[in-house]
Length: 490
Length: 147
Image (cartoon, rainbow over all chains, first blue to last red; front, side, top):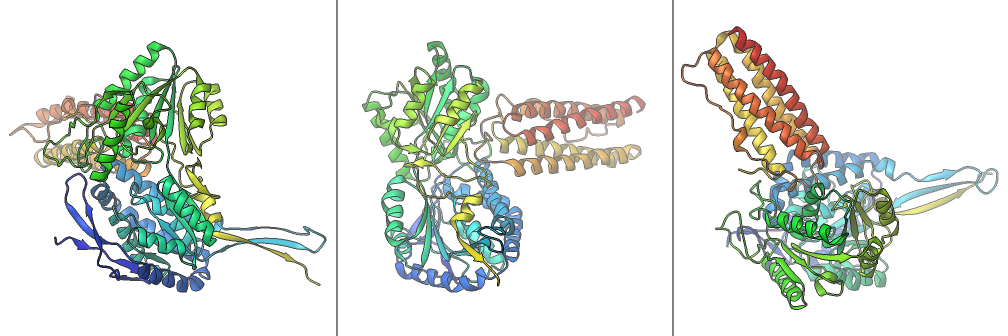
């Protein structure tokens, strides 16, 4: 009791949600209640969308350079509050402070890139295109109200893949943070308020399913961006947007393969592999899930031993402790879900070579509800559940492939296509991998191939639903309509 | 303590630099003839902290190996003396300073080596501080010869 009740931000004001339902926001490392978040109703969404729609005409007529200057100020504030923002992420999510600082930096990068809107949004033209004296011009115009339905795994950064670009391009916005981790976005919105962004340009509605459905079916919402599971992204978000004629960016689930060839530098690769499989406690759409070893028996044994040795040595604890390398799962239900997968793996015949259920925490007094140590399965086959489904936790599955072709076939048998990585010293193998693998993000000796803000970010196959991706120029195209003018003067 | 994460390494580097600065400020207060020399060294310690933090905060990414790159890097061998010996003279203070700087150079060399594969910018700054540390050592040894 006594924890702050969060409020929505609508029309430039902090307002109470029209609900009596609140969810608890819990620090997963310490088990402490951080806040209560409202599960807003469709009436709250209606109010937010109305506010955004009303703000749109003035905002779209604000010069792009002036819109960019708001983002310059936002960036400055974010730099000033860098550590505060990072600590909020660690407290509400559980990730380590290094990971939160990394997330903060990557979020700020989005603001930096979107600040270039006067350049990014430029159209094109050509004189005398059809005949002498007939010219064509193409302008990119803002569309209206967009919305983002945010995931829990990157509470600060994920909304920033979209919000800065959309509003820089002249649109207005309604963001719905994950009710599990609403504090980071609340702080971001406070910073937007501090830069004096005109009322209604950015609105925030906390909530869960009812708020999401209201956004999806609101006729004045032109487009929805979403980051989350494939089940929700494909069957609810993408489908609803199709039915209601909204544009959509739905970044969804993954089951990422990391292929390690015998010619790789195993020692130098290990830090990248640990980051990929166990960074963010495995709760990342670019996380390594299946480690495919290609090479001789002796290499495989050496690689397995090195991987398990490194995973076993990972220091697990409260992410606020700078010496900790892996924090807790975000909540107790996530931990139980991951344990369920571990039990399934054992039942289906995989060998659990490292059992993360046996806790070895840096501080034994920490509550154990959300913690798991890293787990590693060996003798995994592609047909097993743990090799096919997204576990979203610190569990690595080690598989074998006879050669690179077979490893690539394994990747292609997965319905997902978010990312894949290869560790090798062979340029030819890396080139083939890069060329052939059907994934949106490819790593070559990089375990988490996360595109920087200047590049598009999205997957393929069941990992992405929509057309254009988030970030960079793709985001600008997503949030604008091209308008072509054919011009002749008599 | 084993320093495994970027946070731990940056935090330890900051503690070394602030500890060394404290030592030099105290030395400047006691050895008046060498006060400008010691204060200059303390000022450089402050700049080093700024450089390290700037590099770290500018390039840190959750996608890179910030939490896993440092291996077998222990803090104990690099611990420095931050308090002046009671009634120590210039020669004694300079001798301790040389021992401190030697440990710090060694720490920065090792940390730069560990971080070169995942954070080139940070590695470069750590290397630069190590190189500057060698020059500081030369300056301290020169002073010790004439003390």
